[in-house]
Image 1 (cartoon, helix red, strand yellow):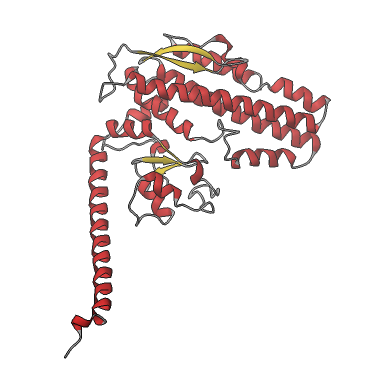
Image 2 (image 1 turned 90 degrees about the vertical axis):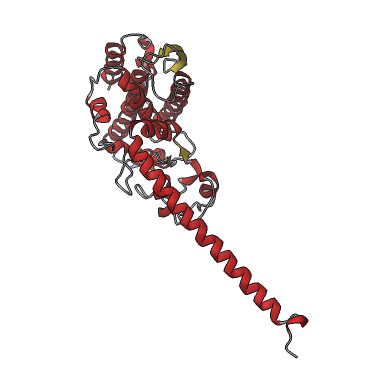
Length: 330
């Protein structure tokens, strides 16, 4: 496992070009050798305590780095409706290093590399945690490691944000948005940029419910992303009118994610602004069609609600009129 972080650092350094990531990037990864020594030489309790501290450190550093990259994306595109490859703006981000994050300056030509590196950092550490729990299972022959890993995946407090978080979807959107500024050198970029009929071919940007390109995407606390309208329909809120925040607040804690069936996922739900803007700019015809469909649906819903209220008012007035003296027949 020690080679995984080194491969990540080498991959970032080779691909970053302008504005390379700091050499200490790999030191911020999970300290597998240290944890393996504790597991083999000390005991279970000490191992899980050390692993818990490492997971919390990784989550803090990942959140700080991811949020800074997302904020830098907004800074670099400020004042321009479309992503401009000739934009010379610069922004400062936070990069995962040991023992604390360090600052780095990015531009339009390399922000997608940092976004991709943050995603790979999260995935590599998720694999490292899983492999360590498997080593614990082989050594101690109990299910404590699997229960711990299951608890991390079900956690909603953000203790393991690098495992599942809306930030991962936003980072993927940053990579997609700025990948056009560079030549498509990776399969992911080629897949993101290929669209013959105006919709995304990448399953990462498709709604699991309607199986179409995400429209006004919302990410749940478990990290799964859906179209806003599809998600509210799945939760039984599709017939209500109001803002996304108000509708999310009406979803009970017992509601489960349509994909992974985790409960209490609406509490950590987040509107993915970068992903929404990016998909809107990449697929304008599709976006315009969906907006028109949503508008027509909301208009018809509003008309039905108004008609229902008028019908109830007429019923109430009719009941009152039956007992009003002026309406008595002489």
